[in-house]
Length: 248
Image: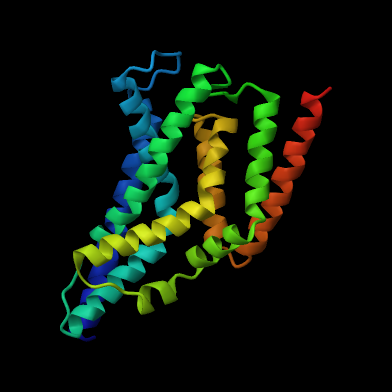
């Protein structure tokens, strides 16, 4: 075994260990509640910050498992770049760019939660309390699953090899940018699915876990593209059924 192969193997296990630790800590944070009261609270700056952190850590817990193959691929290519005499950049910087994108989404989600809670339309655990809102969320998510843009983003997330190998950017800034670009595709793929948390409950751990498992299946299963389309049809039918109930 060559020195490069040894480094690649070591890097792989280091990255896997680090990602596993981050995901486990994120799930522990959510399981512990992280100080988030289930009772209605005034939206002070401190409480808003807690909600934002809750969303951001929840996104890390849900999205990082499905992003792990891309991060491992980046680490491998970066090490091979070093063997060609170019600077080695740790996968941490790619991960940082990826997480920043989901931080921006978490900021928007926090604002949406503030507005929906203030209007009494959702609760932290039970989710939407309005059949019309529930139907709207489900139909919107279902329609997004069937759009060409969703399919483009999902194909990128399922097969990022071309993006990593042919679009490799050197240096720390390049790694951050690549992580952010991949995060943008990932966000385009999953943002409406994350919006389903407003239906099932923002702090409903069963709903969170179910969505996380679905995202992983959609991105890594052999028939993930068709699974995504089928899920879109199911969400549309579900939403239309609730919409009919809301009108009766």
